[in-house]
Length: 105
Length: 120
Image 1: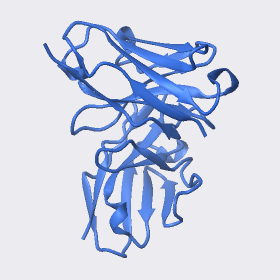
Image 2: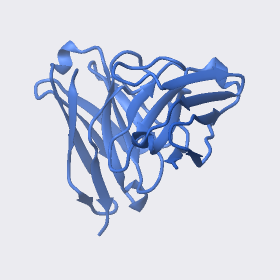
Image 3: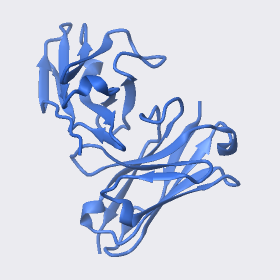
Image 4: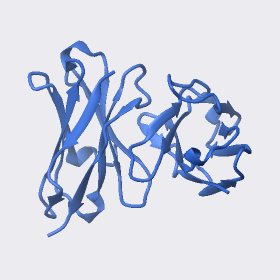
């Protein structure tokens, strides 16, 4: 079955750029979606179909997908962006990555 | 946009059946061309997709849970439900209901989640 892998943690200085990778075999052939989950809260969809942002999601969140790696980029990181981020693809069922904890320094 | 709210017992005994309901507000399930989903998250762990149901009753379950899971839709009460049979401690999790309102392959509306503990 298809698997996607994320780093456990990413640290970034306030105002800098954070990039979170989501790796999977030929993942560029799949649509990748990203969710943000703050502690004690439900996940929120922040990127869908690789690059699209739902209404209300700040422009500092962007996505890409090429080869075996998809990525979520957070530009100008804010304290509010400290959260866990999950990538997800569809492979006859929804498959989630293990999640990446983003810490703002 | 619809809003979702899970409800159910906080504790279930091992080997028994877990039953959860997701109330839909903001519109009628009968009017909506959405896929109604369940996702769970064990304590301190990641997200696991359980499955979805369409308003017509068509279902699609995670193969890892398929033998123990049933989903249903109640259009008259505007909610959808999840049952998990023969629960064990491994079923302890926060259970989220969600909806895929635009495309089938991602969840864009989530409930707040309900915590379920399997314990005697």
